[in-house]
Image 1 (tube, rainbow, N blue to C red):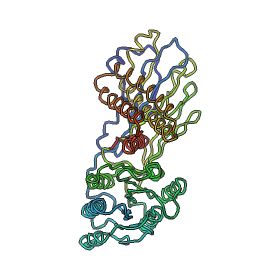
Image 2 (image 1 turned 90 degrees about the vertical axis):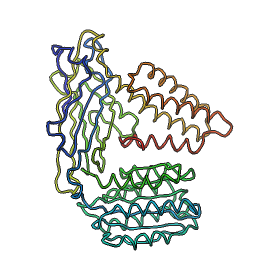
Image 3 (image 1 turned 120 degrees about the vertical axis):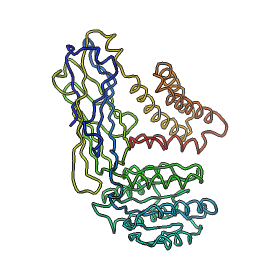
Image 4 (image 1 turned 180 degrees about the vertical axis):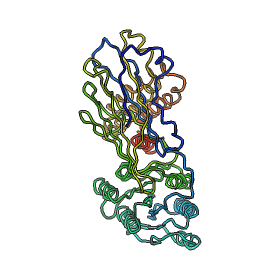
Length: 456
């Protein structure tokens, strides 16, 4: 269990001024399946002030895989949209990408293929790959495009194929590719989101890949988020093969499952929000759950809190962070530990200000900006371009000010956010309005942030 603690001001302030304290992982971290690092943006608080804001950075990382050949078998269903809009190059690239999945799977991995247009169809029932790769590629090549988009039925059927072979020692995933709107069978956001929730309860995650500019990104993102899988926006059909390879590589390197994070806060410390996320916070507890963590993958979260040093017991913890997880094969449950993160108070406010970690502050600005950009998109969708422009102007001022004060390492990320804001405003002010591609790109960034993963 991580303990983020206060120390009295008798601790030498100079030890903080050399750089913000990052709680170190155990000596055997290289051998750990999961590492936890906690860091606070203000390691020294003013002893004279009242409540003060702090941002706790939490990083959960996956260790290196020592024996890749011992990975758990995969249980994968590829669900392909073959509606009429996929004719030509789109469907051909989808087939090529599916071929690459088949080639990279091992003989003990399960594979199934479902296609859908007016209705869903099982092209290849789920079975271990064995020596059937040539046969499977031929089945993929049989696909032709026509008809409408029965997306719900396709995902549901993919889930059924995976569920038949699901077990605690297999990694189960449905991979959905679509370029259009769901227009056959259940089509509402709530119905399809609930399908994701239903599958997640069975241990099945649904990765969604939206191709081009015609698909419903909110629906595709919600389906992925419901089961803690990935959502990709692919603007260029040529990128499809790489996206499939990336997804399969992540699945083949999973080191931990069923991760649960509990952040408990004592008296005098109150959570405000998980920055850029819609995860709820209670009076003294924040919980995060996610299904998988891959080798050398890192999930990064920022928790904003208020601290009253006069109410908080300086001998107690600022927060207790507990991370539990199951091994990739589901054989054991473990707890990830790391050393205490130390926080102190000082009467000298200049010393307290000098100790601030500007990189975490800049990261908080980036996370918040993505959430505000999404709000601007929502206002534009409603036809309220005035409110949308107002948000973009406010954020441009905030990000611009942060950029001027940021350390060199944080400037590129802030410049990118500022460019996004300016581009979005320019498009909204034009006669054509915010372009579909830009809109999807903005929402894609926010969805990766919510998962704590790097944007892809």
